[in-house]
Length: 165
Image 1 (cartoon, one colour):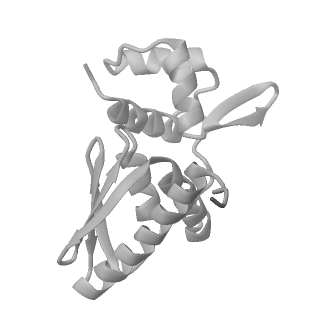
Image 2 (cartoon, rainbow, N blue to C red):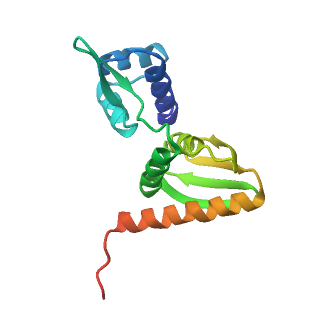
C-alpha cells in the first residue's frame, strides 16, 4: 500500500501540471497512478494540502497549490505547520533532523526549500523525518535554534493559555 506522503506528493504533481477541476477527476487520476483512494480521502488530502479551487472562466475551475512562492509566505506557513506537526528538532554537525507526525515530512520539507536560504543546501524527506543540510555547521546551528523556537511556540499554541496555579 502506498503511503499518504506519496499520495500527497502525487496530488501536488498532478495539480501543478494538469487541469483538474473536481475531486472525482483527481480520484480517477490517482487511481491511474496506482493509488487506491476514495473521494472522502481525496477531500481530506485537498484540505491538508490547502489546495485552492481557482476559477478559469466560463464555469470552469481547477485545483491549484497554495500560493507560497514568496519566502515570507512560506515562512508563515512553516510556522503554522511546525505548530501542528513537528515533534522534535536535533542537529549533528551541519545536518538537522526534524521529526514530524507521520505523513507530514514532505510538505514541511517543501516549505523549508521555499525559504530559499543560502545557508540551506537542501532537504530530504521521508514519512516522518526531514534531513536539512546546512551549508556550514554555524548555519545549521542557527537553523536549529530558529526551528527550536518555532517548535516551542507551536507547543505553546497547542496547549492553549495556562491558568495560574
